Amino acid sequence: MTSATRLWPLLTATHRYDKSISTRHRGEGQMIDAPILAYLIETRNGRILYDVGCDHRKIADPILRARHYDPETFIFGAPEMSEDQRIPYHLARLGLTPQDVDLIFIGHLHFDHAGGLRDLRRCGCGAEIHLQHDELAAAKAGDDPVVFADELLDEDGTPLQFRLQRGEYAVAPGVQAVTTPGHTAGHMSLWVELPQGRPILLAGDAADLQENIDDEIAPGGLWQNQEQLAVESIRKLKALARDTDAWLWPNHDMAFYRNLPVFPIPIT
Image 1 (cartoon, rainbow, N blue to C red):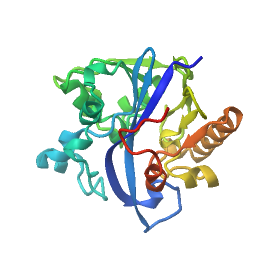
Image 2 (image 1 turned 90 degrees about the vertical axis):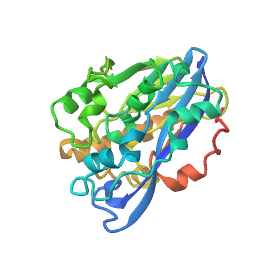
Image 3 (image 1 turned 180 degrees about the vertical axis):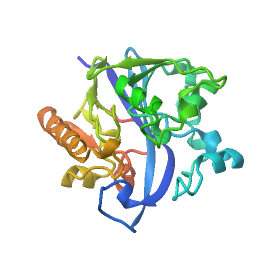
Image 4 (image 1 turned 135 degrees about the horizontal axis):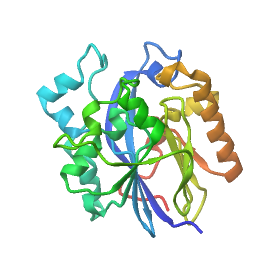
């Protein structure tokens, strides 16, 4: 029996960029607005965050913004992130604090998915952080330019303590980690069984848009240009969704996000 009881998608920021960043070799010159999402999953064993969005300080502080979102590196600039989109603010609307989060599941280490770790730490969150071994190894080797190196460190420069995982495993009863490499070396998706209705399969950045799923198009950004690996991960997600009758969610699709219940209404 599943331990998951409720799930909330959390809009942590938006980013406007060229569509080809989400769909490889498709959509050049077409600008899209993408939601940057995290997901809060309540279980009988505690609360899980899947991804944590950006580091708000790097966006709000002009000096840090210029340093980390240099137009020569980030030609589409920084995401738009307001104070009330920080995860501590979302938690507060639910009557919670960062200390009420028990486990953080990082799907991959890109700045828009792991940057919020430092923000949560500043607010007193001591949750265990799960991460794939291959993801951290690639980041430490400098093989992924979309990882901000300082986001692997605490405020005092101490490396964050990750609970490293290898492959698929049960995060909690009814919450299953799914390996989906391609976009990054150790990218992970998450399958969540709720008490009622269909399970939800959170693709993460294995599939930014519904188009990635429907047309089996790899994301624009790939680890070591492994397009076939990324396509195989999309096919794996589609097969898992078919086999378990799960609802497969793309991760950066604004139209899809707008059709979900409005926060703080949960999915149960």
